[in-house]
Length: 241
Image (cartoon, rainbow, N blue to C red; front, side, top):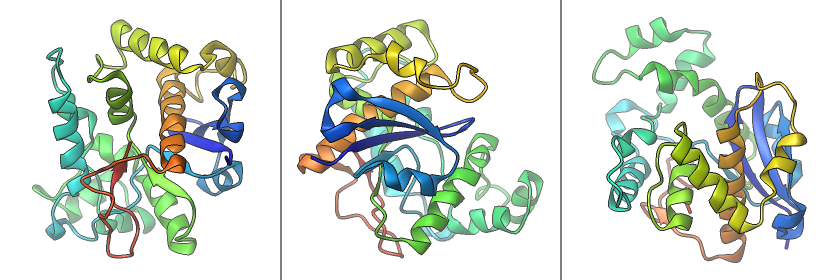
C-alpha cells in the first residue's frame, strides 16, 4: 500500500498525518505551508477542505454539505446541540473570485448580499479553499479526496461525538485514535512547540482523515451524497468517509 495522508487546515498551513505503507504505528505528522507540497507526501490524500464546488450562488448549496448534516443528525444518539453547524456553508467559485481579485469580507458582502452572503467563519477559510481549487485547476488528477473529520469520527465511533472543543469531545476523539493505534502524544511532539501554528483538534482531525485515506485506498469508502457526484469541472463533489 502507498503512504496514506490525512490533512486538516491549521493556522500554520496544512497539518498532515502520514501513514507509511498504511501503518498507523509508523505515523508521523508535519505542517506544510502550501497545498501543492502535500502532493509529494503520499496518496490518496483525505483532506478537510472542499474539492468540488458550485460555480455560482444561483446553483444552490452543495448536496454534499446537506448530506453531511443529515448524517451527523442521524448519528446524534446523545442529543448534542447544533451538530448541523459543524458543516460550514461554503463559497462558490464566484465568491472565491472576490478574494482572487484582492477583495476583503466587506467587498464580498457588497457583491453577494443576503441570501447569497457568506458567514465570516466561511470567509476565513476561503483562502485555503481557493488555494486548493487553483491547484486542482492546474492539476485535476492530483490525489485529493474531500473528507470531513466530524463525519469520519461519527463513522468510526458509530455515533456523533460531543463537540471537539469540549473536554468530553476531546477525550472521546483521543480514545478513539488510541484504539486505532495512533500515538497522539508522540505525533504532537514532532510538530512545532508553539500552538500558534496548530491546535490539538487539528491533529486529531488529520489522524482520523488518515484512516479515511486508508478506506479510500482499499475501495471500501462511501460518499455523501454519493460517490458519483461531480462538479462542472469534473471534480469529485462528495464528502468521503
